[in-house]
Image (cartoon, rainbow over all chains, first blue to last red; front, side, top):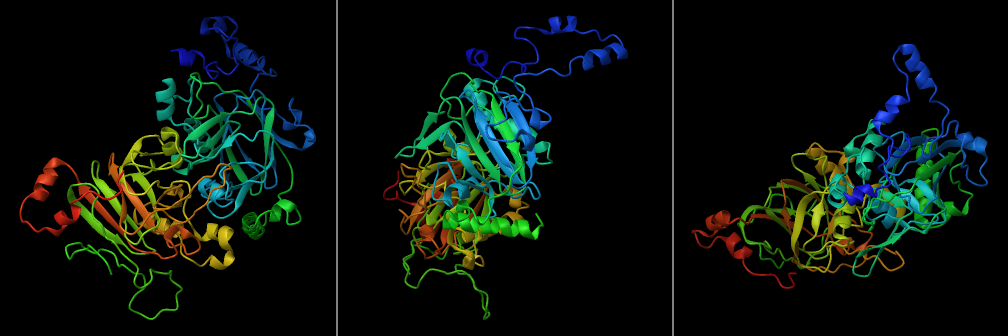
Length: 303
Length: 275
């Protein structure tokens, strides 16, 4: 169908040149013995692709400006329709870059030490008295603590209303939602990411997404804004030890008939959590008490 | 107190918290003497299969069978009924705010809103509603979040998250199963600049909402005890929960003699302002 043909998540993640079928791939490999198979496998190393993790992170070709590469702890380009996940230490800076204007970073956060504490979108909107994510907006857990805070934002086009896509949604909209297919659902990818940390679908709350904006009109209509164009970024500070799950999938309200997603760059580097001496710590009464709760928890745990 | 309640309506929960003994426990507030209470009736014709009262501050749960309609009566007016839904057969499939909002393309819950699961499937549908819009953005209050909103001096107070945990525990569910919820009769506007908050309600004593189960659904409710914002008009009142079977066969049974069945009388009539 046409929607599948125009999907940006259909190619097998850059592993083979476009149009190259399995018959051609067969001709490229001599694997008739263990020795030749080993040689063939080892000859594949050292290549680079459009979407991949960069190890060590300090070797990232896309190190954010004004970041010391030696401080990087995570560097990756997530494919369109791909996902990633990481456990981050308290204080880590986490940055998402949207180089094409078509990325959509769906995010779930958990306390890495007690994953039953997790992102609570209702509290994230209600407690700051603000529905739209932006600079200094805390991503709150249901336990009255700051999991992360938005410390940088050159996009301003984000969403905390619509969550991510389900299989039912993508099957209706694109005719396919398989995680290995051309229009994977965000929930399908989150399920796999969560499973790799011992979590299951019970553990997946509503999430937020970055780079594709939604605004609420006066009658409640959820209006699509789309992105702010290529080259924007969002930066977060992990205020607690975090399990981070990211799915880079088309936003549920994306009006385009095809499944259009761009690559998502992810970088994280060592840093300190927001401290009592910083203006953010006391920026609002709600944020101040949220930080007091967060520090209280971390101090008691020896973090 | 004003009431259309009859002796045939069983009270399965106490209408006020507290008990017969003198206690030093700082329990939550209950409605003031003289508060107008309208007990209402089902919004949909049918044979009553459940009729219970949720006391102020208390949790409640029941399984509503596919096709049955649950009417929630805001007995005292502007009493938030925080609500979570689960597929009774598979509680890991449960109510989802973002799926409900995305599918309808609107941030508010009104008549016709399909309350969807985290898998995008219908759990319940709002079939009648007597206030302009219902909330599903404002989430639930809780001891922990109350400290952010009002200060640590209110940490001891009861909250909806506590109610959800207690009632979920009775159903074999726990903290992993709590997600963002519905707030029947609560008013949370989103302004043009994204400002959002709980403001004075648009409901009144006896206003109702009715939701039809699209499959067997476990309904969890917290009768909100919050005394620091207007989600219950600072006057926690009871809720009445009525489930009817609207199928013709069930209605035939219900409409048959004996006449004078109080529940039949209570179910009659179309509410003012129904939309």
